[in-house]
Image (cartoon, rainbow, N blue to C red; front, side, top):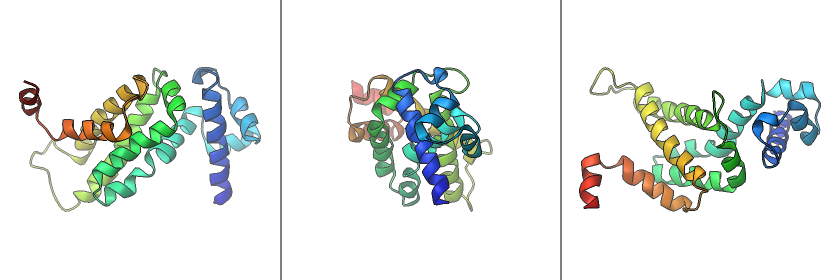
Length: 187
């Protein structure tokens, strides 16, 4: 197991270094494996393609540490952590955010956030039901995944100049108020 994690991390580091030098679309599996010091078949023993590797990076390096915070009910700490983790990988995130299309960084981030939130919401709501039949754990997770992804991606695209703590505060401010409350506070 440790050797699998070690290879995953080596492939991840190689990929992240390559993204700093060239667009993701131009990075080949050979480029990644050469940088990681492994052979091409080793890559395919771990990942389907470079987008699968990108998803692994998002899940394990960007979002992975958040789930324990969520399980303990520490939403603010989890939010600070997502922005802090992204800030640690600032250049990588800024370059990856330029990816568009079906395998865009944004769509991968949204999918991973949805999976994390869905697991959290499903666990918290095991023995409960929402007040409306259309309101399911899937829908609620999608709503919050969309909003958090929007805030994170907007922050990344604006060069991440606002602190992690302030971004977490901004997101919490938005999700804890109705639109009317926010508009009234702006007057």
